[in-house]
Image (spheres, one colour):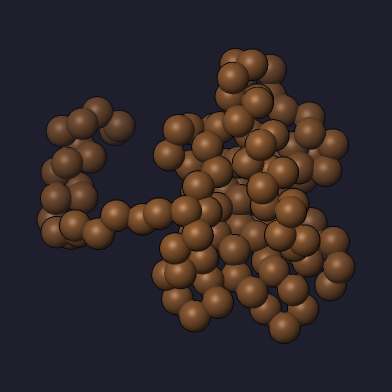
Amino acid sequence: MYWPEYVEAFFGILDIEDSIYDGMEIARDVRIYETPGHTPGSISIVANTPRGPVAILGDTAMLRLDYTERKLSHWYSEEQKRQINMSMDKISSMNPAMIIPGHDEPIYLKM
C-alpha cells in the first residue's frame, strides 16, 4: 500500500503542486508545523482558539503518555526519540490549551 507507484497513482489525480513550510497558515488561525520523529515528514496542526491553542499532533505523540511523560515506544531509534522530543518541545513552547494525540483521547491542559 505504501510503495511509490501506489502513492503516485493516488496523489497524482489530485494535481497538487503546493508545498508546505514550517509555520504556514493554511486557514485563518490554523498553522502547520514540521514535527519530525515518527517519520521525517511528520507535521502537526495548531489552531488558535478563544481558549488557547489546540495542537493536533498526529503520530508525533501517538498516546497521551507520549506527550505527558515522554514514554516513547521501544521501537523508535534513539534519533527518532530525539526528534520526537524536540518536536514536542516545539509544540509545548506554544503553550497549548489542548493536545490531541494520534491514537488517544485529548489532553486538556487549560480548557
